[in-house]
Image (cartoon, rainbow, N blue to C red; front, top):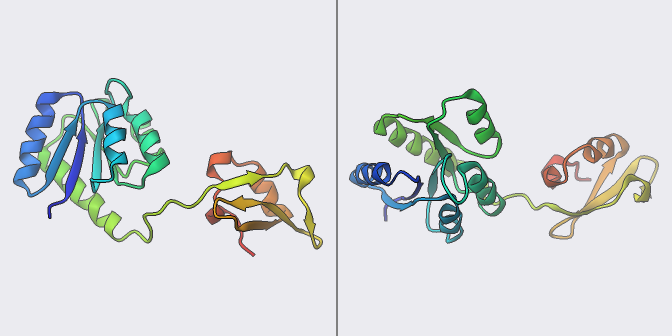
Length: 186
């Protein structure tokens, strides 16, 4: 069975050319032409990698990436006609695995796809860490001994216990980044 690639770009001609090239290299390619369709296709769980253009209708590539990351750890390679450092940095910080500026050589795209797939194959886990489901305000945290406090529970119900220094660091984090992997387990 060949590796399935989701290619999301509103440039239909480019999608056709890249599909033909990637199929010739042994990949199975599905093309969609807007960000909303890309999110829906990823949700079906039938692809090993997604290649997203940044500038698409309905949902741009960054918004599509945000939606995809909320439900999947599929490797994502971003494409853009804008070659500004800030765009690449934002895409990578949002969870893209690689970034390629247009125009590009199809062989470079192929090499980057293969490299991202290799890295994903050797990744320790493809399951996202569960989010903390409840976090109490500091004034409501029960004391455990002299310095340990319960700060919340994971989505699976495990208690998260930290010391006062760790509690201070956690209370400064945005809620979406509070994962058990970032807190001390005792």
